[in-house]
Image (cartoon, rainbow, N blue to C red; front, side, top):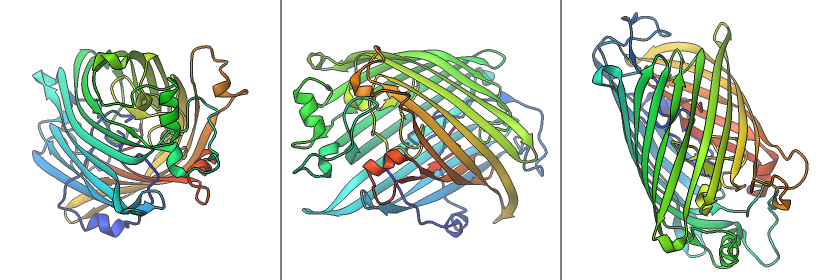
Length: 440
């Protein structure tokens, strides 16, 4: 995930096409990163026809660079700028590439009562090598650092309120979130589309609650833990099923994973130790012509003594925003809701409509219509007053635009409306996201 808050982008397509020699970023899970998308397929294939933009060319040995500038901002984060870049190596019939290296650098600046401050920082680097040991092993190391001085926390539960108490400021529902991560995924081919996935993750979390904030009061009351510096060590194991025809822009097939994870925090006297289990299933159905129906269902279950920053995220092999933000229910602000149990559904109508060649490289333009819905529960009674009564579904709806650069780079710009965005931006209750790759 690159953007942990609403971002309004002002870069035009002309900006993109002028950057035909810069790098771009893409690799984390297919549901994934905050922004990075892990390509979950690698196998030798028959030679492809280089002149067919749909089939691609996986035999010609070459490098493909691509890049996307980040320019934007809003009243919360100020002016944001940065770059997303990737470098992919193709050849020898290996799909989706022989290797890929990604880099993301972004920050935003905003005027505050004490002067200009950097409100958000995001730095990510990873490498994906899918064809080790003749295609039987795939590794994906990733290094990242985030800091968000206005990360949201509205309290626990699906019914947490967004009204500011009298005499408070917007900082009441915010905290300064700082984290560094080193993650290594290893995937081992078992049979056909089935693989074993192992994950090891080290995190250093150093959140800073603001004086008088909701997080500070909940932590003092023992409702929330994890507000002091912590070293977190996570191990995950699971199975992956992948029959997609293409990882970068799937048109048919199924992707699914299921697994469990366990996390131990240090120092141990903080009492942070917990686990989780998750299931993701995505299906891609061609509708005729360029149209594709993409659907996905996700369930994530946590148990034990979970810190605050994992109560609004989930995922066995990645830390995805749930149930708000750019990787789950778009339009709902990231961190708006927090709980142990999360479930959501994504439905998209996608199409790549135009293929062009420019500066010696291939580009494709398209778009999507999207609808997301889901909810969470604060505990396993499913009757907590924190979760409210009734169905309690959160939802977001909108549309987006795609730019595919070469064979391994897809960028998207999406706009989604949700009633829940009013709590963060009453005058503009929408989420606007610039991301790398399709969401799933």
